[in-house]
Amino acid sequence: MRFLMMTTDDGSAPAGAPDEKLQTEMGRFIEEMSRSGVLLATGGLEPGGTRIKSSGGKVTVLDGPFAEAKETVVGFALIEVGTREEAIELSKRFWAIVGDGEGVIQQVFGPEDLPGQ
Image 1 (spheres, rainbow, N blue to C red):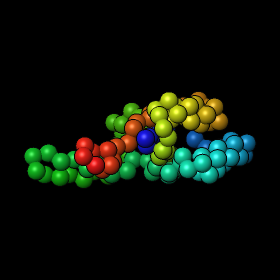
Image 2 (image 1 turned 90 degrees about the vertical axis):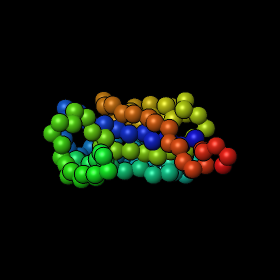
Image 3 (image 1 turned 135 degrees about the horizontal axis):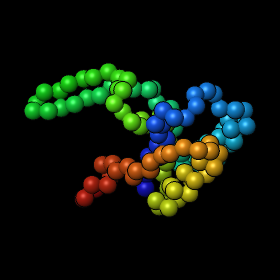
Image 4 (image 1 turned 120 degrees about the horizontal axis):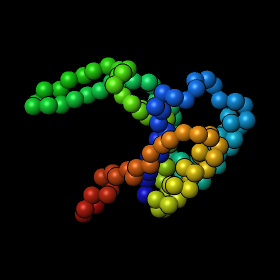
């Protein structure tokens, strides 16, 4: 089962680079997950981005940042584990390293998950 674990930001977190201890601990965690084959991809996301909207056959493209957004996804990890509970446990380990914050875990479905595949 694949899961997308996302970190979100509502704008209240102080900006700045993480301290050396956090970087070291996160580096070990990422290396462990990579070696075990659990971590498929990880990264940070640009603020704002580009929105695509399709309505009535017309596609509209809007560039960010978007002031009305109350919360944005700022980072992600794509993982492959056996159960949702395993994904939750990895997320708990992540937050134990990072500290305060919020995130979302969503299962990722692909073509192999379609009936008859």
